[in-house]
Image (tube, rainbow, N blue to C red; front, side, top):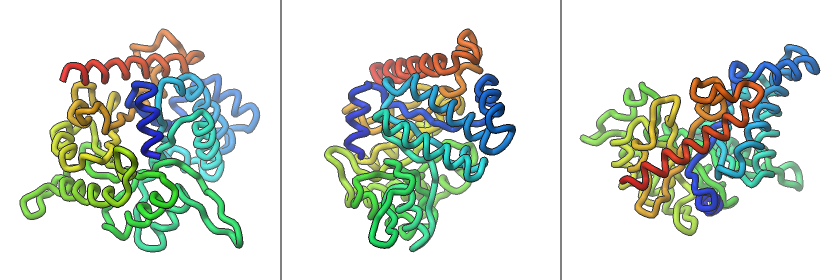
Length: 308
């Protein structure tokens, strides 16, 4: 699947992933009213609004981008109905030819981690048959429990030719409380990065590994270090836009071949119509605002890479 991701990036010339992280406050009133009129102000009504909102955005941007990244918590908060909307979103994006990166941040020990890996990336055995569960292409993984929590995912990646992105240096302000701690004189994130490179060496695609890393755009200097530590790992870069990351912050995440990184923007794209810059589109044309935000982001990144 890393090969498909790279092929999609080359085709679109857009190292961009749209974070499908819907919240009801982002969804235009006309979509909520239609969903609530059919299902009431219920969990099912909320899930229907989310699904219709996502579909509108995907229809508007799928030809511009290589991948999407739905954050599962935004769906889980609506219970089973929300998870149905999550699955519908995953399936629809794959029908559109997009690579789906599930932002699930899983990681546990032994059989528990194996079950997470099977549920999101692999097949579960039911009697004499095997079935895909959520069937995403990539999943984010928390390595805090060590190799026990990651190796089951690596095994499924090898079997299914899918991938993972391991949390290495996250974009949130408090990430340094643990990730920047010095271990034998070196920051913990660097040690985790070295381990990602080791796991990845066992799971290679044509150019890059199936085992990638999450490194926040809000920490460009750390990104520069980690790019060297993990030369064959694709880096998923959150934190662009709403969290403060800009195109100029991203150049060191990429290798000299112009590949090696894919940059995420969530509410900066999906709720673009709520920004002053895109207010002219209005709620009724929210998807067109999202499309313009993708075009602007693509140009920002391209200019930054050309100037490096």
